Length: 439
Ligand code: S3P
Image 1 (cartoon, rainbow, N blue to C red):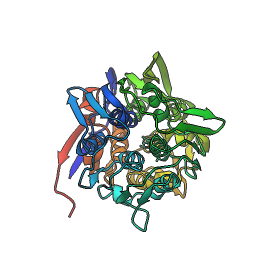
Image 2 (cartoon, helix red, strand yellow):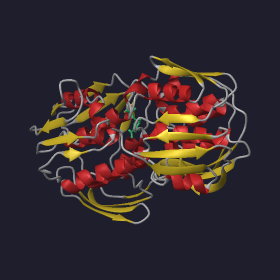
Image 3 (cartoon, rainbow, N blue to C red):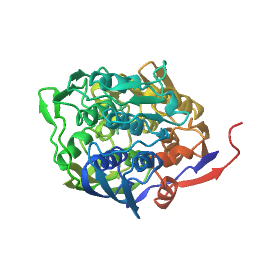
């Protein structure tokens, strides 16, 4: 089992890139594979999660050529050109891969089973099965709603209107992807705006999703055309260093070419409300996605009440925001975030337990947490195999007198390969150690 050891008093300095956006990378591979003709991608995230999506398409006969440094060439097979993989497709640790692939496969002419690792095998899939069934798919999970997902071929998916009960970009995207193969028009309405990368990227493949009031509308049966894509840096990965630079005295960093899609920037908004100094430089739009260089300087932070309307736009950043909260003056409260309980770990529990281990006053709520800022003490935290919990507590190590040990850090590679090397290169005193596996 791997662990991080972080010694306190690090100061972050430098101008650097973080790896490509995970959500956009999954979508680039998926749309490239089901488009007609060639798609070339630059800046793709080369992580275990994205590999799960790439390998699934390779098993279904798609030629994918991975080049060094995030380059990829995909010879797309069209909406109906995938082949029976003849074996279960393993989505590893990735909820995004499993849910989006369920959408891609719902309208195909062969049976398929989607499986995952221990964590993914305990994550809810009924939320994606329901809208796909509404489109006419023959799709099941285990009776408890967990994977494996089994899909049997049906004659034809039919367009339908679907109102989502849970705000989830994965569910929305699965529906939109399945609806590409459905007969006629399909529409979906979400309870809160979630990340809209699928909608934006489809435009680049020549397939517009139109918006009618609160409804997103997709017309089925139209092939996508291969295209050229550039993936920006992942704001969810950048967030660790944004908070690190905000809390470690004397820090000043520039994160280059980070995706700042407004459906993702809740973390920046919340940190700015806490008093963080984050400036947007060099704004651009690349392949329909806004990007910027982000300059962050250390400043004192204050606790805030996080609005429920901000939750969907910062859903992956509540682990690292809890570390900002632990360093802030006063109390930070989060509500309306019960979704955190069904991420790679029960993140409300992982955060509150970890902070308590480090002497921070933190309280678990059914749908969030409250954290009172104070001093983070040296100690040991179990990441529960959750990549974002591991990286969040590594960043906490910047401000301790002494050191923090974060255990079970293997899964950091699912979203942020090279985290330790990058963190060290900009001033974190971090090392990775291998120890005995859990008994
Ligand atoms: C993602 C959507 C979010 C997020 C996940 C990636 C995506 O999940 O937590 O890391 O790429 O669509 P939900 O849509 O389930 O909230």
